[in-house]
Image (cartoon, rainbow, N blue to C red; front, side, top):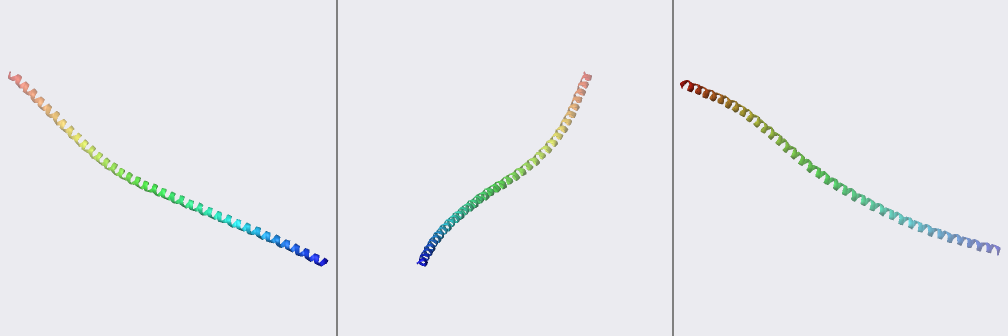
Length: 135
């Protein structure tokens, strides 16, 4: 009987241990399921963050492309302006040269005019003197 009692107690103890083991297994299964859910949630968050970063990088690249295109346009405009400025400088140099030549011609004409005027004045004075002598 004592052996039977011991056996019953041992069976009860084993059943309790089995139940405890089952509860522990269930708890571990729940933890594994929670852990799996958490890992899936983190994976989705990482995918979303990566997608956001990709979109941001594409937007930055597009903006950079616009800036580069604008810079190229500005560079072309600057080159055009520089060519125009150089053409204006050349034209200014030509005009200055024409002005210099015209100034020299004007000086020459003025010198000739003054010379002719003096000659005419001398002729008039001579004619007046001759006229006085004739009188």
